Length: 426
Image (cartoon, rainbow, N blue to C red; front, side, top):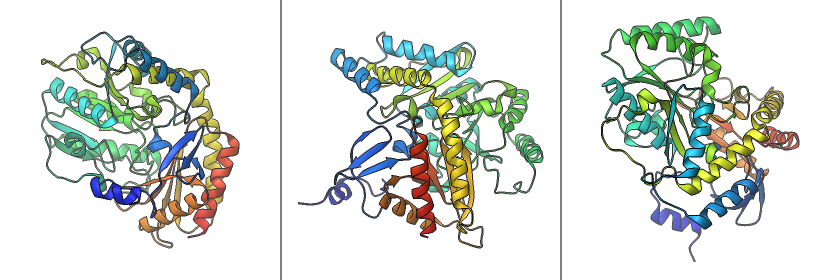
């Protein structure tokens, strides 16, 4: 009989990447752990790409899914849907956006696609500002605003996209500046760019760039950008697909690190809210959300089952202060990893906040990316019983560490020890 890997390669596209030389089949999970088909247990520090936000097999979520599935699984947005309205009410209040409306989708890609539709329709412009090193999804429109060559397979685009400096603090032309000078230079670049364009619809930005290797600007950059955008009537879209729901510890939303200029006009979310279920969505003030002048529904967005899961998951997150846990345990993990990597020549930088941590690797003695080293550390960590991710944009290679937000101190210590051993094996 052919192996599952052979069967995968026979029917799944070549561009659907798999981690590891011997790809892993995960069969079940519990808490912060998963098991493979051979029965081996792993500590999970990647959570299905930051999607299993609270815990694997969380009883409160699995119960909500089961109970709702026993009543009705699907109806579409053409009918009133109590779980959808209840979750929308909670998210609207939490978003910080005044007079907010919420539209549910099935993924972060679809959420960002919807945000682009809203912004371009509202502003009657197809020009979008995006950040270098960004990632916003795999649809035709979101690929066209992704500032990361590794994840942008075509130069064709329904939009005119212009890229702004600022998403990466420690690389690029302004890396040598202090934080205040860095922000000033990025704002000057934005001002200059707007002097060469026609009307722009929106700026879309991840407060912390996920696929780009958990890079971020100094706090306050997007507030400074917002003051410029407001003068031109340009909308700000905050892509919170990876930063939302308290993962950064310091804030519930990533935009709140840049809050001096107020909340974004549009906020997109996905991943963690469903704890593994397919949930995404858009929050916008009513004037923007209601600007469409044609029919629009969602067949699967707002499914009763996924909404029930989201409600249970959000309730658990808030009741157990998982944002506070991300701040406390994430802070410990970050310091532990910085201490563990001291003296490891391949480590250029350990960065992040909360339970969103990146370790950038370079060839020793240079500033050049070393993707082979990142892959080697992934393999070594797996051998040690730990699953992590990797990423990075232009000329970078990074390890991505993002455990479920219920991570314990003991598990953080265990994971840090495995990562240390994996790095020192390079």
